[in-house]
Length: 363
Image 1 (cartoon, rainbow, N blue to C red):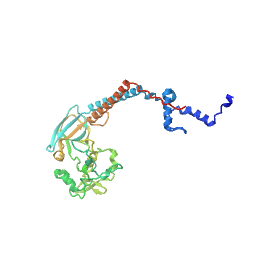
Image 2: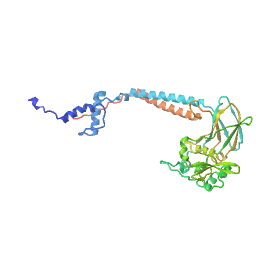
Image 3: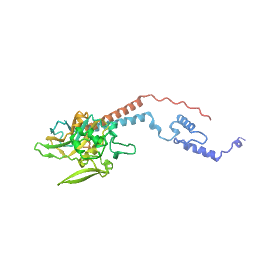
């Protein structure tokens, strides 16, 4: 009979049918034993095209055009808020730029009420090519890492440093006297910014500038073999820096702190580094700025148009003292917000994507 002609299905076949529904709940990357992964994916795509979201339980509705446009609009709004905040931050930081050259012995500066409280002292070297590869890679072996190896090409010996800078910089030449080796070596070390600044009020009282703790705390491991020692000459105690138990040309711990900052070379041909902090900030008034050390090498031989000293305030929301950095980040946020807005606009205006042709599958 017809009933007798129906063969009972094997337990394996029944298990395969029971498991088929569970496989359809979410897109798995596993294929069946009797079909390739390509065929399985084609079959799943065919099921999705025919049954829609009922063919699976994964929330793929969020990948449609309207939700995508909504996400892009939200991102655009958030980046606009970030840009606005950065613009406010940049406008809240005031600074005074003092340009000077090797011929200047002193300058008078005026701190007005808008700039009162300025506590950061930085220096700028425009058009100084500190980002060239030849310059960046010429530094001590202490900076060697897994991905980058450095060498002191161009300034390995005292004679190299004398030829490269000593002939045009008497203060640097004095540091090299009676030394057998040039340690730390390299072009970055040789070109260190050595200028010094002193600030007094109109009555001649000195203004304290703190030159300690300028470098990043995370850089401490790089200088684990560098130590500050002292020596007694007559009744005076002098500092000097040792590297691997050898005396270096670094005169004291203050100079070492400035050198650590100098080793943080910029990514552009525009150098701006922190030189010191004024505890409590500068009250409004007139001050005399003098230059005990004023190296001529940057402007006369290294094509720097002028050197600048910057007095700036710290932001009430951060410790940044550069309005230029805030404006740059704000402009970048505006660009990202514009891109997100255009993406949202395209997703809303663009026509519906053409429907894929259903593939013919054998029964």
